[in-house]
Every structure is written in structure tokens, then in C-alpha cells.
Length: 367
Ligand code: PLP
Image (cartoon, rainbow, N blue to C red; front, top):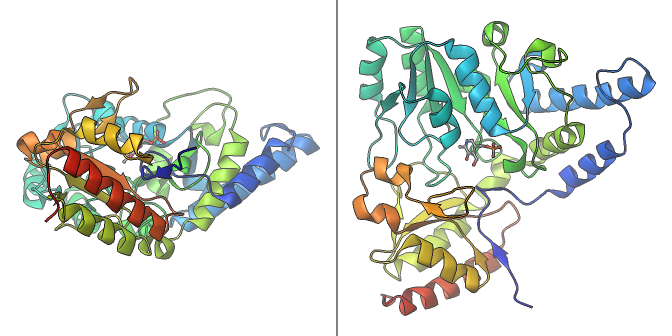
């Protein structure tokens, strides 16, 4: 049987053993955290332990953390719940979850060719008035890290709320609500090595107090998000949040750099190579070679990589991120390689060999 190698951590991270153990333990725990009997109280303790762990890990207070079903819901809750129908400004390279919640009327903050938000453009847009700015901590396709502290300063000066989609940066970069100067940050359990099904919006006290809920129901989450808690996923999310450290993630950078050297030797161009980036992510453009063909060729060789945003149809959509970075035709020729938390040197040698043979077959020769 063919051995498989996973390079698509930005789509979802492999489950961490700590998260698996915590999830399984919570699956066996009987009781709804909203019930007042002993079983309910035991479930409530699990829930509140998870809330404390995640809030502490990301620099906020437990009472200001709202559990959601994942990053998409956290983004929607932040944008609808804090903008209050007012004007939203969002980065040009945001995730579709933010783009959809911000809506077609949103102001789009342009980025430079490295994918970094243009601060002078943001300043000018803020001067025209806004209710909320939403910019991601790190991009899912290129790994580009945004200058969130500077963006926060501009928002503070203009008196505008600031939401950070920290779904890709959390657990890979130092990530603290307080230090970023944000009003709210979005988190997603499965991007940290937890199971899918749980995420969170972590807010400042002030933002939490004025958040308008999206879903009402049984009064869970202090009336900010109705619905019975997905306790097993939440317990796994907390265990993954404890285990995923920026120091460990930084140790992936040398592997990522070696992958880039191997690809560049075959004629690839590293997109956003000049920007501060996530340590596990590289976006490699092979001129003249369609991204979809590269993904298929590598898949046949046993490697899971991705291109653009994978739509639910399974097709590869042209990347709005790379288009916003003015890549032109190159936007359809780039693949994303994102190393999982448990990658090893073998990932590098396997990638180098598979990429070289793919590039050769596609008519490119190693330098
Ligand atoms: N934001 C970013 C930057 C992402 O990369 C993703 C998922 O890829 C999301 C939000 C959505 O998160 P989820 O899959 O948990 O809904």
C-alpha cells in the first residue's frame, strides 16, 4: 500500500493525542452542562475547565469566551454581533467566512504584493467612518502575518472595534487578545489539533457585554450563543490549545525552508517569501503549470497538498488571496504546502523527490 504524507495542516491539523484522550473521556461523561443534577454539574465542570484553559492560553478572561461550532461561526458572531449593522472594513485576503459575514457593502482594505494590509489605506478608510475592522492574524493560503498591533493602534485612534480572525495563527504564533489589542479574536479547535466541531470567540469585557447574539435558544453562554454544548469537541479543543505551542510550531520553519529550497531548484517561486509568515506554511508557484494538475500529480505520488480554497464541491477555485496580491496568471499556478504539527525530516525528502519528478514531467528542469 502507498504511504501517504500530509501537507494540508491549514485545512485541518491531525488530531493530537492529548486532544483525542480528552475528547474520548468527555464522550463517556454523561450529562448536559445546563442540567442542575450531579451529572450535569460534572459536565459543567468539564466545560468550565476547558473555558478557563482556552481563555488563559489566548490572553482573555473565561467569562468573555463564547464557544461556537468553529472558526466560521466565531467570525460571523464577531462581525454581526459587534458591527451592529454599521460599516465593516475587512482585509482583501480574508477567509470566505469573514468575507461572507462582512457582506458585499464592506470596505476592502488592499494588500501589498506580499499580502500585507496597506496601513495607509486603512487609515484613510477609517477616516471615512466605520463600526468594525476585521483582519486575520495569518493567512491560510500564504501564511502572511498581518501587523495586528499597528492595525489595533489605528482602530483605537479612530474609536473603531477590531476583530482578528486568529484561526490560523493561534497555536503557531504568540497569540494573545490583550497583546494584540483586539476587541475579539476567532479560534477554531480543529486548526490546533483538536477534533472538528468546536471553536470560540474570545472578547474583551467591553466587547463581550455589547455583543449581539446570532443564535438564541436555551440561554447557554450567558445568552450569547444558544444550543447544547458540544462537550467532547470542546474538551478536545482545550487539550489541543494547551499542547499547541508557538515554540513547537517554530521548529517547523527549518523543514518549510528546506521544502522551499527544493522547490525553487525546480523553478518554483515562493509567494510572500519576503513577508513574516506562519512557520509551517509555504505557497509555491510553478510558472506554466496549473495548480489543480500539481495537486493531482502530488496526490497520485502520495502527498496531500492543496491549492486556492477547496470549495465544498471539491473543485479548486481561483484564489482571491493571490489575485489580491496582484499575481495575475500566477494565481492559478500556486499550491499551498502546510506542514502538520507532527511533520518530520521525512516530509522534506519525500516532498523534494515528488516535486522534482512532477516538475520534470510538467516540462520543467531542476536548476
Ligand atoms: N478563518 C481562517 C483564516 C481559516 O483558515 C478558516 C478555515 O480554513 C476559518 C476561518 C474557518 O474555520 P472553521 O473551519 O473552523 O469553520
